[in-house]
Figure (cartoon, rainbow, N blue to C red):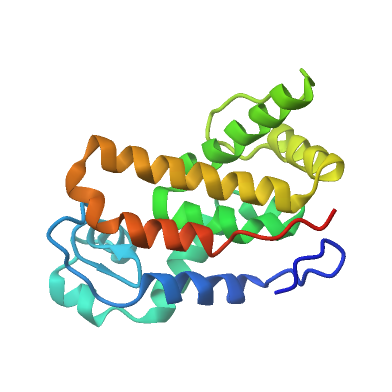
Amino acid sequence: MTTSSSETKIPTIEEMLDTILKHEGGFVNHPNDRGGATNFGVTIREYGEWIGRPATIQDMKNMKKEEARDIFRKKYYTKPDIDQLTPAQLQPVVFDACVLYGPKRAIIFLQKIVNEFGNVAKKDQWETEMDGVLGPHTRKLVKEICDEYTWEDVNNAYVEERIRFCEAIVRNRPSQKVFLKGWTRRANSFRRAASK
C-alpha cells in the first residue's frame, strides 16, 4: 500500500477481512485469553450467538473461515457503520479495532482522537460525545480533521490510542502481558507515513 493520500488504494471489505484473518490465525484456546477458545478471532461465546446455541470446543474447531468473515462483516463493519467512515482509508484500522475490542470501544478511540485534535487546534466545534456510536456528527468531524490535517495523521493517532489502551490492559491485568507484543505489532501494522 502506498502512503500518499492521493495515491492510496482503498482496500475492499474482502481485503480488510483477509488482513484481519491473517492477524487472528486459527483455533486457539490460550489459558490467559479472557475470551476463551477462539477460531479466526471469533470467541466461543460469540460463535454460540451466531449458531443460536452454546458453542462447544469441537464447534470452534469445525468453524469455517467464511463464517468468521460473515460475523466480522456484519457485526463489526456494517452494523457499527464503519462502512460509512470517510475518508475510507481509516476504515481498516478502525474495523480491525472493532474486531479486537468491540465496536463501542473502537469508536470511542476515534471520538477521543477527534476531541484531542479539537483541543490541539483550539477548535471547539471539533468536539464529540464519547458514546461509542459512529453517528453523522462524529463522521463529519473525522472528515473535517482529515481535510485540515491528513488521514494518515488521524490513522497514526488511532494506532497510538490502541497501543495506549493495550498497555493499560496489561497494567490492570498483568496476566495479559503475554499478548502485548502481538497487540502492539498488530496496531503498528496500520501505521502510515504522512503525505503532507
